[in-house]
Image 1 (cartoon, helix red, strand yellow):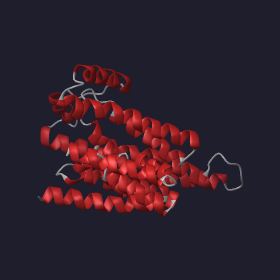
Image 2 (cartoon, helix red, strand yellow; image 1 turned 135 degrees about the horizontal axis):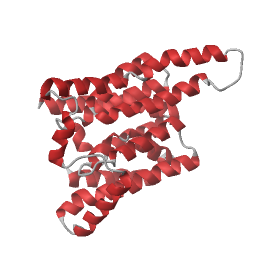
Image 3 (cartoon, one colour; image 1 turned 90 degrees about the horizontal axis):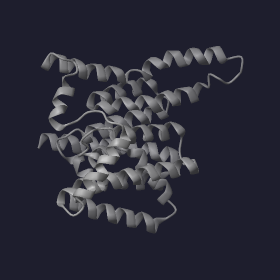
Image 4 (cartoon, rainbow, N blue to C red; image 1 turned 90 degrees about the vertical axis):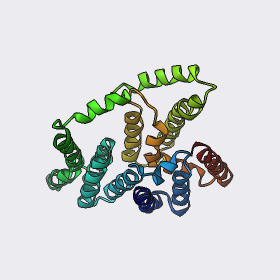
Length: 276
């Protein structure tokens, strides 16, 4: 009960950061749609379970939010927590680094160029702070199992190791063909393959239409590919619940298409009920 309550509160708090981030980029209507798309995402029930999804949603979005606002100390604190919560949390360094470069433009000519470069170097320390979260997790492994990389051995129980995402998609397709009419195929392999295609199309459309800032687009691409680089990918839907950029991009597209937005929300609600 305590774990579920904690996760739910973290998710709600994360939605506040998510709304402010989307509202600052696209406006109120898009922000509202983005939060609803995230809340009704077919695997969003993990946000209310005693697992890491709610906490990760909060820490990751808070870190990116402060990176977009160029508040580097706040980013550092939330970035550490994101990387400590989950290994992929360290990816928040990608938008932070790009935002830092865009803020001070070190390659632009001008009399203050040296000063701008110094500011980048000074704030780069904060951008690298999420690595402390990763180091803390490795230290935890050392304390508990006397091996900083003990988590790799534990993951062998789940047949987990790094695999290039194209190989992952290949075996997902093979398992889908072998289980296309079973409950396992419907609950795991169909959504795993469909979500990758759907999220990639959303990202590609945003890149072509220049829907959002490059720092968020690159982060979204890295987040998608890293989460699809696990050798036994049973939880793709769960992992992608943290892909807030994709919900925001979908909301930006749906803002002027209220009928399409309602269809998406209804479909999400139905699938959420089924999968939960």
